[in-house]
Image 1: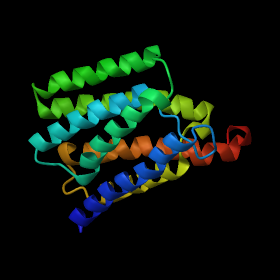
Image 2 (image 1 turned 90 degrees about the vertical axis):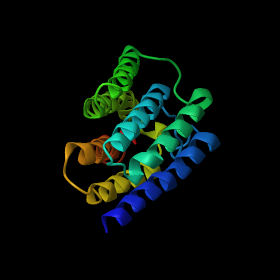
Image 3 (image 1 turned 135 degrees about the horizontal axis):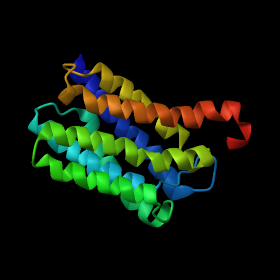
Image 4 (image 1 turned 180 degrees about the vertical axis):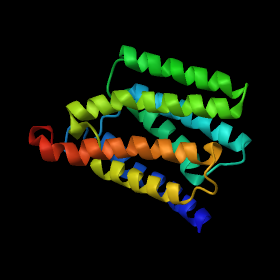
Length: 193
């Protein structure tokens, strides 16, 4: 059952990427558009790769992280011509944190996992800020599916150890915050919708 949930989680990551990629490509200014923050997706790609490697070294890989690496790379590539331009100080600090996580991978996979996941959250801050200011800059349907993917990934955790559970928990925290910004915040601030 856990392996099936892990596969469902990975499949949902891939399926959710489709409307997100279409929204980036088709119309970045509509209510269903997406204007990805370049720095966030670069950090997420680098850190997903680091997390993937650390989890592989600890024999705790899951389908969610495996699929997330490919999705983050694809969205980062599209964010270059179509995403939010520029690099803020926060984004530069997040990129530095990603570099630290990659360096720590050679020292200790668990240390690298902790550093990567902490930096992963920091890397989300530019997207949280952009979404707070302009919820139409993100695709609600895609983020909703990514959140459901997190629920499946949490159900698929084989053992509640740091090595196996930290990544699905961190992804769930990030996706839950995005869902709150995209679905809940507009209820209280209609002008943000």
